[in-house]
Image (cartoon, rainbow, N blue to C red; front, side, top):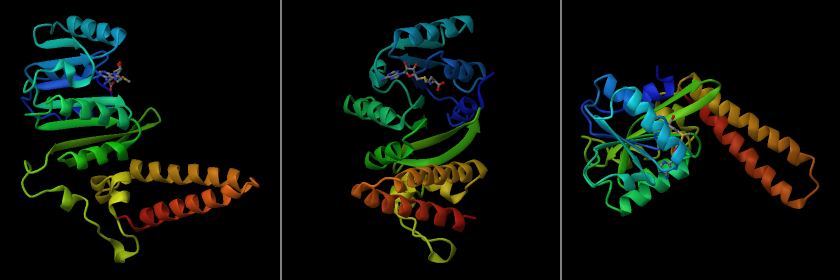
Length: 251
Ligand code: SAM
């Protein structure tokens, strides 16, 4: 059985896709995608030998060697242009995912790709910024908690392919709840434009946790005699205030 995290990621894969799962490790996602009938076949990419072998074993044990091609290589390098129309990348930092997409784009591997379903462990803002800067528009965001960890799942399509939505609309500044806080682009990239529109308990807990972390830093800084500490303190105080204001005005 898939983890909740991978199950939710799988649900972002359009039915009948030509799927490529990059950094597939045990190939759990492509195996479940094919077994469930969601996709007819898939490609599992892995750069490291151990996980590559684990993917091969996972696919063989599931009896899916004909349907799932396991390939060894860096990022999207394992794909022929046009071979996949949905790419999943999960369980890495947002900056690594963005770097994989950036290199893949330069190699022409994103041509014909219609859906990116991504699950960064950290650095979600970096990944959102890459998508925004490279013509991809978020169509959904999910946040969940599993085994004490918080995960976000970002799904994007090429801008212009989804009727009626553009990045300009998604990231335009707006000020809900009487205009107390302006949701500017930096804030939307950090917290997520879709998550902010429909915040759930996990989202609130994540950002309350973020406030606690910053307060901890503030406390340790207030013991410091260094002059630079003062500047840092006011920066962090401002951050705390901003997040707290946002949480306060959310529905
Ligand atoms: N995607 C699976 C998941 O979410 O459960 C496995 C996540 S695992 C923590 C990250 C995997 O990405 C590792 O197996 C690692 O070898 C692989 N990886 C890291 N950088 C990669 C790259 N540039 N290209 C392909 N795979 C990569």
